Length: 588
Image (cartoon, rainbow, N blue to C red; front, side):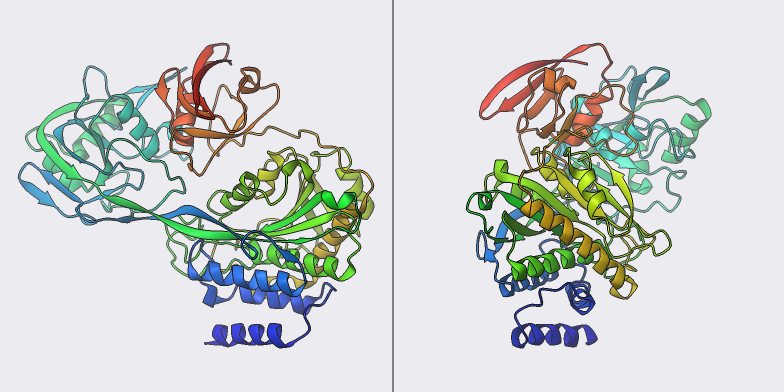
């Protein structure tokens, strides 16, 4: 009830008090963060009610400051797949015996929706690896075409957290191998060493909406042992045998499995909140500085949400991540609107769905309110509420994305210990603008133990420190909005962000679409100059559909194909550009 009363008080004060205070004040920062990080907003999960309440609050602040609301009265709507849920009709039969969904078996969110009836071949861990000295083959001497593959979860080096097989042993990687081998479907099961409790993992959406063309599901050992009946083996005995021999194996079974999979990917609508303060100079007002921060967070947590508290379902309030950054955008909007001294126009944006893969900022750059060639710089605030009072340090990313950036930041520094990071790519919304050749500034006070947990609460914010960061941001914004010459963009670091744990001997030099929004293949969001893809003529917006004739439908397929390639070779890459299909030759 306290949260409800607080929200009502905030709304009443907003309605009855002065329109806005142009100064950056601690009470206003507390009000903004206190509301956005309140329990009643339930963690601001994209597309949920709390997410909408947050957007309404931010728009009211922009409107009260007298900004021009863009798009649909300040809202730029876009759709995204936010979650997965079981549909009707999921069933599994081994011979004449039926098994129950969510008890005995569970499909994966990336599974095809289909009905398949076929024989079954057990194929070890479902791996086929031949990379330098690392070799493992669970398919030697067997043909799985048209059959179910039954395979163990994990890999042959389970006790090693840095197993060399990690990149090949993900569920999607095994699904790709099964698909390449024309299997009818893939059934995964946890051996006793992998999971002694024999528990099914919950159905969760991995933030990529692409799906396989074959069904992929997990079963309990009870079901898997029923499939193995008549072979003289069990999942436990096969797991032990592979461990003892340190080699892959496969085994034909006498079973026939019939399964129907029906998983619904739930599409939701969310929005960016976008408003503009027009410039005062007749010429420079046609140039724009963007100021942004994401307002979404992780909701109640749980599998697939991004929460680091894996076993906890609770409100993830996200006070620092990123109510603090949104408060900065609001405070800067009010300050600049009060002064009205900006020669260039300023666009203020609260981005939705950043936690889903920078979806909101990509929605803006794909459908911008103004021509992107007229956007001269972008300031992004993400987690600025936990200033370390011992070091007084803040990190600023993108400092090499213009020739002038570091000098500007140094000249205006009020006394922070500045940690510069030159690269324009990073884990926040500024990356979407860097990919458009726009100089970016990424302000943050850094991560902390409460990051992406239910403990990131408003009472832990250093409000005085946040105020200082916002005042510094205001000084930088005023400089960018009023300097005679726009910044000189320069490429700073690759436009490809490598996933954690990836071990690639080659690189194309591209920035893939991580969210899987393109259904025909994997869209390219950026190409790094002078890298193999660039030299081959690949362009931003191209859609990769195959590498060396093997299909690519998403970033997981792309990375799996990349792992098989060797430096110094030439490979064919099928792409769609516009509506035209063509093939490029990439020299690695």
